[in-house]
Structures are given as C-alpha cells and as structure tokens.
Amino acid sequence: MSERLLPPGALETFVALRGGRVRVLEGSDPGEGVPMLLVHGGGADNAAISWFRLLDPLRRERRVIAPDLPGFGYTEGVPYAETAADMADLLAALLDALAIERVIVCGVSMGGEVAIQFALRHPTRCAGLIAVAAGGLIERYKNPVAHHMAWLATLLPDPILVPLSALANRFVRTALNQMVHDRHTVPPEVVDEFVRESRRPRAGYVYGRYNKAAIGPRRMRNNALGEVHRISVPTLLFHGTADPLVDPAGSVTAADRIDGAELVLVEKCGHWAQLEMHERFLTAVASLTERAEADA
Image (tube, rainbow, N blue to C red):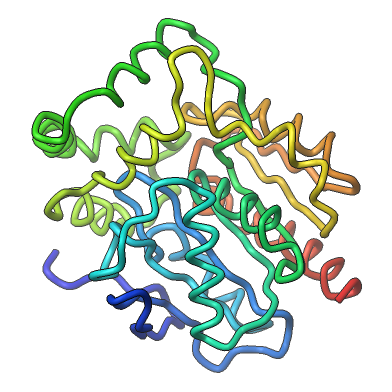
C-alpha cells in the first residue's frame, strides 16, 4: 500500500504549469492517431484509478495524456479549479505546455462534465468527445429531499467539511462497493489506490468545492443540457444503466441533442463503466475514434 499505482504501459511525467506541476501519465511508444486526453472523476479519484485498464490499449493507437487535476492525485502547487469550465480551461493550458494542438477528449463522471465543457469552450481543439457517466447533464436530483440535503452539505464551512470528509473516507471500501454493479470487476490494485487517495490530506476538498459550485438549492447550476446542441464533433456517451450516482437519463437526453452522437447504455453496469465493462468500452471508443479521425 506504500507505492502509488501506475497503469500498465504508463510513463509518469510532471509538467510545469501555473506555478506548480501537473502529474501526467502517458503511454509509452504511442501510435500515430489523434492524441487522446483522459480526464478522471471526482471524489477520491486520480488518473491511474480511472484509466488503469484503458491507458495501455489506447496508447497503441495514439498518444494518450492522463493528468491528475489540481487537488487530486500527485499534482502539486497548481491553483485549484473549482468548476468544470475552469478545469477545461486548465487542461487547454496543459495542452499548450505539451505542444498538443488538438485531441479527442474523454472523461468520466466529473471528468465527463469537464470533457463536455472542453468541447464547448475549446471547439477548435476538440476532435472528438467521449463522456462516461458524465455529470452536468441533469436539472436536479430525482429525489427533491436528496437534492436539498446535498445542497445543504455544500454550505458547511471548511473547518467542518474537511474532517467530516476524512471521517467518511474511512469507509471508502464500502462506498466503492456501492458505486459499481459487481465489485469483482474492479482490479484490486485500483481499490488499493482508491483507498490511498481517500486518505491523503484534504482528500475530497476540491470535489467539495466543485459540488458547492454545481448544486443549487432547487436545481443544478452546472446543467449543460441547454448548450450541448452546439457540440459538432463525433461524440460518444457511455453509461451503465445501474449507475447509482449519476442518472443515465442525462446521457440519453444529451445524446438526443448532439447531432450524430452515439449512446451506449450498458446493462448490469454501475458508475465506473469504463472499468467495469472495459472491453465493451474499448469497442465503443474504437468506433468513435474512427469517426473522429475521418473528420480530422
């Protein structure tokens, strides 16, 4: 449990940005296709967790870049970005630092919302969009009481919120079992890294700030369904039907509003669809990248 996780085929680098350094995982010996930017989720996530099973097969076709967002994983000293839009802008700056002009952007959960915002805010730099169980696509929680309680939690001051988060993170293995449909589909190395990440100092702090910006008293402040029709690149929305955290209805609606978008709903699959059903995911990604490169 002492050493941090690296996915198979990954090289770890650190990129100077905004007064700090961003930890970036890249695939070794990449293929020649359009580069792909992978964006992890919130909570106790980082790039190695979200993309453990994907980086190696993806890098055989193209350069793959998987950063830890500020406040997550092993990125250090970079000012926090608290909204998906700000995170998308930070990733554009990271691409500048790496001298990468255009990418296929792929994100999961909070990272899915970041990917959508990247496609909206930086359209000339986006060759394709893959959103896995993406946030930012609902008007409000299904249960009004649950929505109100989530909003109230965002009002807690940091001196209360940080220790409460630390206490909750002591039960992270139980929480993980509730996130996925079948816990045996998640590699044990990923579970161990998830536990490590949850026990880092101020773990979940940036995700709490993200929620504070996203959740309003009666509806979500980050609902992008009114904007996604502007996305014109090849798009894949991939979602488990048994996702207990993000309502698949948001992906269904977004797919209907994005011209030519492909929607893949996976039965018996929870929130970590790209890990739980990674072979099905890779098949869908191959179809998306073929379309994106045909348009490039």
